[in-house]
Length: 135
Image (cartoon, rainbow, N blue to C red; front, top):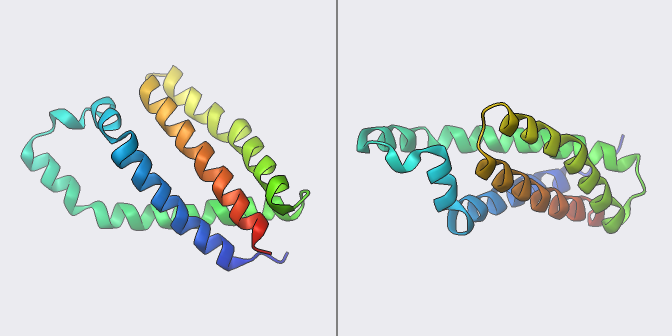
């Protein structure tokens, strides 16, 4: 199957930018409160910061895998920007929302649910457009 690896790589990088904005200036404060980070000690905050590089690296690798698989789905779909955005939407609705909903129902946070699914919707639509445009 012919997958454009540049589109996958750019999609992973763009997803990191979207996540940085989403969990930073847009919803960062609400996210930190929902996670209980606002009550962390100075020591725990410092410990968290030490592991940030590894966390970002692992998230980038996970994003590469996700967007490669999404590109595979899109190769067998209708193609193009709008077609791939539709596939991305249905992947979000069929996979992301049910998993995040299960997390919220079984003891998670509804705030984290809404922040997480909305971030993934935007990310998948944007990356669907990138993969669809970059043939």
